[in-house]
Image (tube, rainbow, N blue to C red; front, side, top):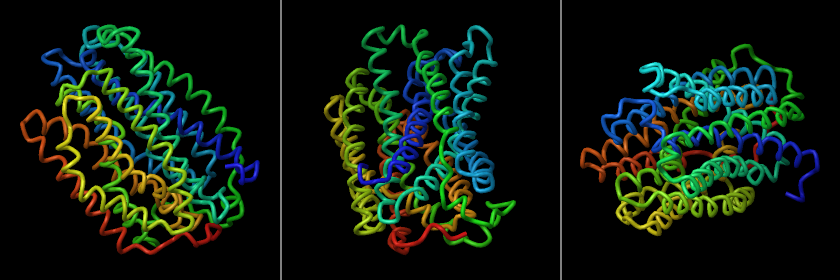
Amino acid sequence: MTDLRSGTRRSLLATLLGNTLEWFDWQAYVIFSVFFSGQFFPKSSDVSALLAALAIFAVGFFFRPLGGLLIAGFTDRAGRRGGLVLSVLLMAAGSLLIAVSPTYEQVGVLAPVLLLLARALQGLSTGGEFAASASYLAEIAPRGRRGFVTSFFYVSNVLGTLLATVLGSVLVATMGAAKVRDWGWRLPFVVGALLALVALYLRARLVESGAFTAQRDRPRRPTLRAFLEHPGAVARVIGFTVGGTVAYYTFAVYLPSYAQQAKGVPTTSALWASVAAQLVLVLILPPLGALSDRVGRRPLLIYFGLGFVLLSVPLFALMSASGWSLFLVMTVGLVLFAGYGAVAPVAMAELFPTSVRTAGIGLPYALTVAVFGGTAPYLVTSLSQSGRASVFPWYLAATCLVSLLVFLTAKETRTVELTGS
């Protein structure tokens, strides 16, 4: 990043720090669901409580399209900075609510209702976050460095997940799984709420992007206009996202919990295997983003899609009760995902003019993530419990095949200008 202007570096760092803290809050839910699920639902069995918690995880995703509609539209009208501030404010409120929520034993059915409300707030937040961040990062980056700059979106995303995973590992190691299950699960949400306030401060001080301030056309209904005037670009956002979101939520988020429940991997081993695999992903994203500035976005997207089409089933077959097998499977999966993560934000941003850029990404992206990404953890768990675990990797391969076909038919966009209205 040393070759970027100081103003660009400051804006990039402020955006990414805020995004890291926001995704720490979002991912802490699924990482700690194995511990707190019994606190919010009747204790008929650990598996049924976990499935109930994951169902709320999935339902929370269905608030993301509303966030993609409202926050993304607001961002195209009022500015990228305003949208980024609003998204992190909603995330902080959701984390604080989870941290202080009473248990099922204390208030009965009100406990899962409060949990659902908290996830709704966080879903609204993340629904607008991707589009606002992708648009802002692409617009502040020099034309020949857009892939490199926007690749840090998923770096910050993964770092947020990584921080939540490390905190889980530390809490289990120092407190023991029983105490974490009893009350220690609240700590990450307290930390998340406090860190979100830091993100709020950073984002309030962002400099608005030049592309946004230079445009004259600011439509009152940017989402409607994006759908009416750029239906092909909207369809490509959906196609890009189908395979990417299932791959991400399977390999970057839920696989450690799956390994514990279905394969018997010890909790500590699963968490540390996840940490190591995610560090590999963080290291390779920026070089791949820089590579896309030279060779284009399509080759890396095709590499991602083809890799998962061919390797989804073999990777799941390699899973065993060993922490090392989890590390191997996660690492290979995340290296494949890096082809998508490094370029998807900029590739989507390059599809739209400035006036509808955030809105054009926001709703279709959030809706696709809700339908496919949010349900992936629940689907793999329920299939495992019904003795049909072998079906899920074929489902993953099928969704990535859909994305691969879209990548193969999409035009290269790395040379387009982002200053048009």
